[in-house]
Image (tube, rainbow, N blue to C red):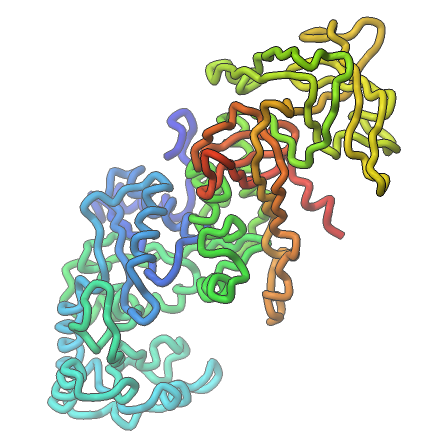
Length: 557
């Protein structure tokens, strides 16, 4: 995915892979992206996708897409489908390497029997709460379960009966027999299997009531698939000894290496899937694809491009140090991408009518406007001009502030791609609100400057007779503060009440008639916008992707 003219960005994981290939430890690398199908992917997952698929691509290896579907109570096919769509949208393909952890349930059960037969696993009768108490703390060792020395034959019998469904949920678990005094709590006889009745798994149906835990499933799935480099975020660093223990003590065909890197933490967002699920289920947002969400579906609906997200992930880099990434870095990536690719259009978001008094009512002409100021290959489009136009209310000031370079009473301004006009009269309603302007056109200024005077301001406009009514949704950051919920506070209190403003009386130039959902544009002097999926031929709906510049910092106290 990297431009061939640029040297590839390096990182410590890439250096490990290069060394392993150079030494002959591996002749081909295999990575994997292992999402849980219990929610939509977010921008943090994009970093892992770009890393895992990107490494495999760079070194001629393979990357598996494997669903970690060991907790069916929270999983469903909707999430499976959305994850596949998101990975493809980012530009990656797993070919025939699509797997589910549930593909290995039978083999994982056999491995558990191996552990029992070696005296390395036992059936425990402690409840979940009792297990937590017995595990100890960071400063105190754990205590042995009363069942830790249960005879091998009894363990085998009970484990088989657990699979057969003889015991209720929570009655028994299978635990690894490692070290209850280990300073690493993850090695204090962790649970390998738990009982879950009444669950219909989206892949295996009702075939199982006995489900393996993630810490047991993940390393063995990696080994069964021949993964060479298992890349995880830093919170799994303390789990690595258990990862290695599982691989070491059963008859797997390969021995992957787990390597940890820092997860992506982004300002003004929450990245916990639990919190994202709450935002959706509590209707604090309008779904997983709400453009304010950090999900890939939300970013896509917001107008972000795969190229911009991949570039953002490359800019963030891969390190072993946790940090908080500025939202401005993500916004810069999409600005850079759209600046080069987005056609320009004119849209008036808060219309104010201007009547051009010296321009004949029955006259109409067509201006030719370039689609992109830096790329003539994108061509041009016709822009109709007539007796009445709409300008943005923000482009007129009856009492202008210092430095105001737009339209004022008695002042002149150039219309983008058209003439210079002068404001001669202001029309107000009974409440004193400006509802209309009367202006004159200097018909000798099309494509050239007026003689004897300098006009500084340029504003955009749309012909009233030809404009298309549109709805525009101005999205901002979902949270008011960089770290929502910091210090244990309720993150909901940090939600930005102005994260969405809907403008229903906008007007856009006729070149946007019939726009297709997903089409991206720069609305001149406003920002970058995308046509929302709710767009119809009769009424386009546009979402603000990002402004032309970062004004957030200046606007905050």
